[in-house]
Length: 48
Image (cartoon, rainbow, N blue to C red; front, side, top):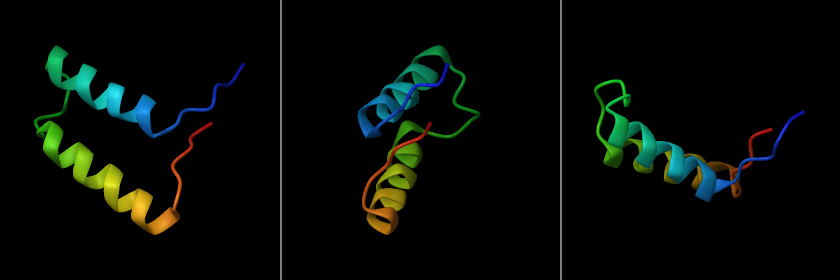
């Protein structure tokens, strides 16, 4: 069963990974930057 993830869901994943120390060494700001760049290019962010 798949679930559609939107921008808010992906922001929550960034926050959770940062909180749990599972961010891969990058900062949350880098994650938000990439998320915003993807949104600028595609217009909408959805992952199935």
